[in-house]
Length: 234
Image 1 (tube, rainbow, N blue to C red):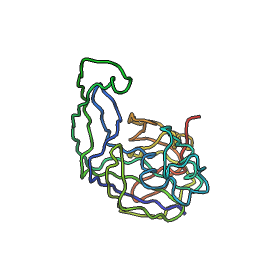
Image 2: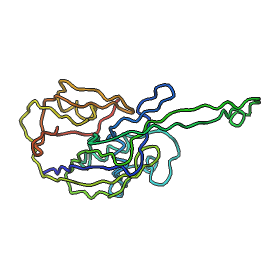
Image 3: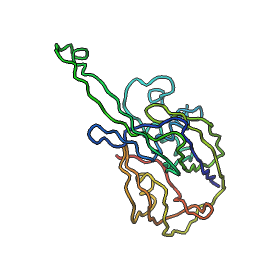
């Protein structure tokens, strides 16, 4: 029977990634994508996947190109029957930082210039002590690292498993509401999604407050969609 872990994550540094770019403002949404969590939790390129992930797709020691390989990296998790949901905010605050940089065309393109025109941008980051929650579904028991790194700045975060439950998936289908964020590509093949709110963010926008119909796991007082797997656009 599958195990479901309710996990909480607390930031010890400010966390930044560009969910939205509004002019010179780079905003971080208070949601953590499940792709990012898989990498941060060490589920990608760990030893148990060394035989299933080709060496040319490995990021363990060196990244030769800035090309994401989500399908190559996350498909082995389907084979191991491990799934991580996106993380929602339990409590958070934001900080706004302004940074400046100078025009360096003369350095990059060897162009002559008589001016050094400074420019600036602003980054809206998630502040330390913010807390997030996500779920892990696994066929086998898992052991997580207490400390992980997240975001562009590789911000330090503490992970804790607050509840674990062995569950049975119901063969019957029902309509229910799941308030936590979901990756629509991972759930729409196995469930009928009726209504939802969109969280726009790359590489795949998420959905939350989802009214859904399909098989489910009973976890305490809530229902969690069953049969979720990592799926990718063809």
